[in-house]
Image (cartoon, rainbow, N blue to C red; front, side, top):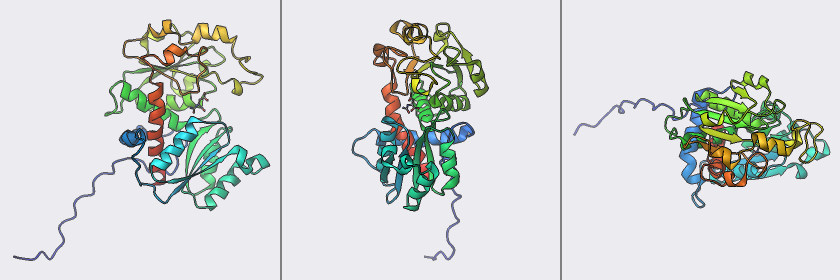
Length: 332
Ligand code: NCD
């Protein structure tokens, strides 16, 4: 039997499964459709692990992720923590109460200090738009933006896109053309809306933002969406309605449920609230989304939030898969 003296010809390298080569995920605006699809494909593959209570992967074993939340958060922080753990990474949490930022240390100094302790990735939430980018420029580890002021919240945008794609059977092609996403309420204050608009436009969807002029000004059209001050005529064209919380804390001169930008909570609900009666006028396949936390009885009625069209719990669950994908692709 002749013995082979030359190695077998090398098999041509398989194309990379994901077109992602960035170190940071700072926003969806500025990414390509291919990059958004790469993140969503990776997220879709993680859904079984993300939704199981037992299965962990070891893909980031030995690595540590730091969560730096300088602004309140429950679901996003928990979701990133679970995502990192399900990838086998260790997690250190520095919420603002426990960190030196309250003693005047700058965001960047805090991030550099944490990096010097040997973390592979920093997940950051801050009040200042641009904070994640500032940190990304000053450290060499991966940075994932978990919400920076009114700017972007890219992992929320991705989980919204994945939920929307699944709800309309588009999870394979990840193409949303022909679908209309209607975003209602406090769009101007919303980093969730900015990321959702950028991502949905990249995947081909039409986006219509609806709200009173102070919360959905015509200038939002610069983001590539249409703007309307009237919800009722828009309802029949929606394939998904994303209700946003009125972010009173981000309105100047606002206290409790009062804001100079909102005529009155009751009027807001009458004109823009997603009541059962309005939900009944949606197309049969249209879904209802909300990033949470919800003001039940203001922008959305409890029976709609818990009703058959609601995919709000799916959004939360897809959040873990999306964050696993973001951490894996940026760190790995
Ligand atoms: C949003 C946020 O923090 O930007 N929530 C979230 O991440 N789940 C929206 C909000 O606070 O209303």
